[in-house]
Picture 1: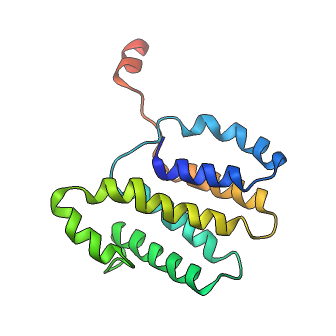
Picture 2 (picture 1 turned 90 degrees about the vertical axis):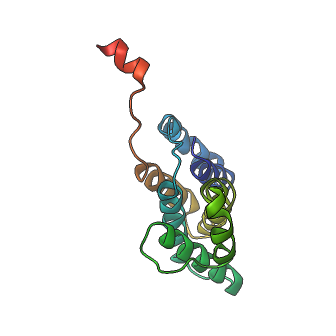
Length: 156
């Protein structure tokens, strides 16, 4: 499972009511084979979660700043923003030559950004519906799983 998608699902589950958790269960099979390397998938998930959180209502000044910087970094990695926001200005140039920037972003930075955005979204009215909708959007944003070579052989 993709680490950012996993973080989104965990936080959505943790902030849902018991009824909301039961309504999340049918989504579980869609998480299979979602782990993809590369900035695009992680950045798309962060941008989606942050955009949703920024529309949920009142945010603390620090929350708004962190989410805005996370959004800038995600858009930069997606190729539509000139410079990354926040601490990414420092770690991207240092880790990129070592080829560590993508795993670092996917495993640590993006998971934290997405988790904070989902937790903020959960504070809005009707959190179960909002969290389930956000999780569905996140799943829909992921590339469709491809058949493995062994599965393709068995169909031949």
